[in-house]
Image (cartoon, rainbow, N blue to C red; front, side):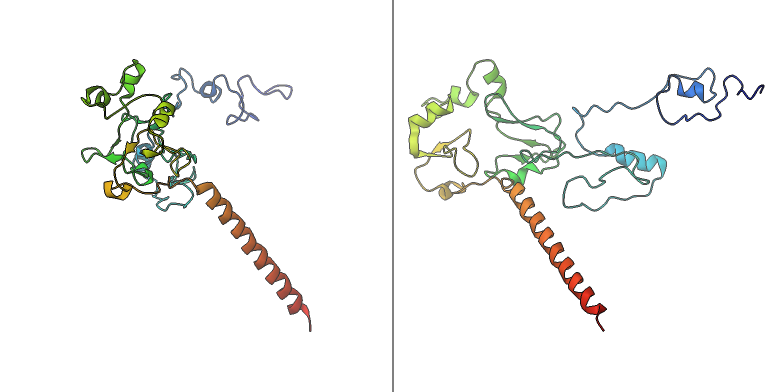
Amino acid sequence: MTDGQEPKGSLIGRNLLAGAEADPAGDSGHEGHPPRMGFFTDTSVCIGCKACEVACKEWNAIPEDGLEFTGMSYDNSQGLDGSTWRHVAFIEQNKDVCPTGSLFRTEFGTVVVQEDICNGCGYCVPTCPFGVIDQRPEDGRVFKCTLCYDRLGAGQEPACAKACPTESIQFGPLDELRERAAARLYGHDPEDGAGGDGAFFLLLDEPEVYGLPPDPVVTTRDLPAMWRHAGAAGLTLLGGMAAVFAVHGRNGGKR
């Protein structure tokens, strides 16, 4: 070192853990090092199985944790910490109980299950008001009628409607079908608790006779209002407790 200058290549005073680094390994003194390595997580194909979290813990002998649900999410590990080095976040939305996004609404307004990204969690089964979604025992994935989505895309009608010899199964735009059948149909009313169904029936008796709910309601419909009420109740409780402590403090200070 001469004239108070640091020797060429010196790492003194440099922060190697932050900021842009063109060659972090080289700047740290490694010569002839391999290319910089890292992670890229494609969330479009992640099914939320959390196998990566388990593998990380097993290989690195990390203590188990996160075995309790918070009650706010299906995600039990919640975030990264000293005992969780890999975290799969569940981004739940009010309009969909599927954590992997395998259930989606098509351009025809129908609901389809993408079996290739279904992880078999089964959360959608109890939330379906009609019980049309169910799991196959072989692998646990869920399936339902797709209204032959592949045929619709090709301009064809569903196979069952095409094969019906008496045309009892009629397929077409919902508005036309509703006008044709009017109030004689079950499941046609867009104002009911399920928002109107994509498949409805002409019943000759009460819905219960056919094993159908008389007033179907999507179970997650009222979740936003429930959370708002719970939050308001919590704030009210905290306010009451604060008032009690304030009064108690004043009375306790008197002699």
